[in-house]
Length: 512
Ligand code: HEM
Image (cartoon, rainbow, N blue to C red; front, side, top):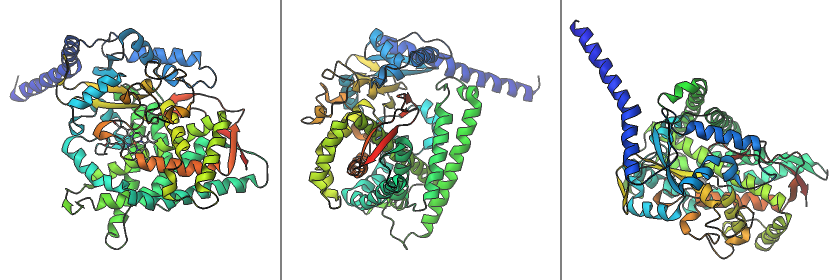
C-alpha cells in the first residue's frame, strides 16, 4: 500500500472511530452516568432512543380523540410524558435518538437547578439548535450562550423599556383599529359575521411586530415573511422528526431541504431590510428594535461589540417569529375561551368601559385592566404559548446527592406543570381566571409551577410588550363585538412546537 492509500485508510478509520464514539460510546457513557446518579426512565433502543414509543403513543391518543372542548391538552397532545410521569415520577430520563433528555416537571427541582447555574452558563440543546437553524439561525437571543448571550441581551433590553413601549402603543392601536374597522365594513349592516380568528389575529400580530420592531410599514413584506414562516413551521413539524438520531436529517430529507430553502429566503428578505436601514443611520431616527440592534455597538455610552450581519439577521428572525406567534396564540385561545364563557366577556367589557370609557386607551390605563390580566394568566396556564423550555448542562451540575452530567439536555415541561393536579386546586383543566385575583401565581402550590414566561435570567424579554399588545387588542375587540363559537369549530389543539388550533378558530361576531 502506498503513502496515499495508508493516509486514506487512516482517515477512514479516524472517521469511523469518531462516528462510533459519537453515536454509540458517548451515549452509553452518558446512560451509565445518569443511572449512577439515580436518574431512571423508559428503556431506550438504538438508534431511535424512545422516539418510536413516543410516535406510537401519540398516534393512539390522536385516533382516540379528545373529549369535546376539553382543555386537558397535556394528556392528549403529549401522552407519552403523562404516561412516563406515572411510571417514573416528575424527573426522569428519556432519549431522542442518541441524545439523553432529563425531563423535569418538578418545580422544586427547577428552583434548585436555577439556584446553582447562572443564566449565562446554561447551554441550549445542540440537537435542537441544528434542527431549528432555518427558523432562528444560530445567533438569535434564544439560541446563543455565554458571553454572546450577555452581549445580545444587553443590546436588546432597552428596546423594551417603558419609554419605547409607550412609543409602540400607538402603532399597535393603529393596526388593531384598522382590523376591527374592516370587520365592521364587511358586516355592512348584517347582524353577524363568521371569521377565523386564528387567521385574523395572526395576521394582526405579524403586522404589529413588523411595524414596531422593524419599521416595516409596507404590509406586503410582513405578509410574505409570515407566509414563509408558516410554511417553514409546517415542513419542520408536520412530519415525525428524528431529532437526536444520527443522520436523522436524511430520513426527512425533503422537509429538511424545504425548511432550509425557506430559511434562506427569509434571510435574504431581512438582509435587504437591514441594508436599507443601514443607509439611513444618522439621517432618520431609529428607535425601534432594529434601530437599536444596528446601533448596538454603543448602548448607554458603554462600548459593546457590534452585532455582525449574520447576528442581526438571526435576531430579526428570532424576534419576528417569537414576537408574533406567541401573542397571536395567546389571543386566539383567549377568544375561544371567552366565546365559551360569555359571562367573562361581560366582565371584561364592563372593566374596559370603567377604565377606558369612551375616550382613547392610553398607556397608563393598561395596568388598570386587572381582570383582563387574570384572563391572560389563565389562558397562558391552560394553553401556554411556549409549552416547554430547554437547556443543556455545560458542566456537571451538582444537585444535592445527584449530578446532572455535562452535556445532558433538559426538557422543562411547562404545560405539564400547568395542568398538574398536584400543584393546583381542583378544576385544573377548567377556565377559572379568578384563581389569579389575589395571587400572581394563581394559587399554584409552588411558585416555579407556573412559568408562562420562563424563569431565571433567560426569562422572556418581550413579556411587557406581549401584555401590552394583548390588552390593546382584546380591549378593542371586546368593546365593539360580542362573539360565540361557530358550529363549524372543531377542537383539536395540536402540538406544533407551540399549541395551535388545528382547524382554526371560527367564531361568530356580533356588533354591540
Ligand atoms: C404571550 C406571549 C409570550 C410568551 C408566553 C412567551 C414565553 C416565553 C418563554 C417561556 C421563554 C423561554 C424562557 C426560558 O427559556 O426560560 C421566552 C423567551 C423569549 N421570548 Fe418570549 N414569550 C412571549 C412573547 C414574546 C414577545 C412578544 C417577544 C418579542 C417581541 C418574545 C421574545 C422572546 C425571546 C427573544 C426569548 C429568549 C430570551 C433569552 O433566552 O434571553 N417573547 N418567551
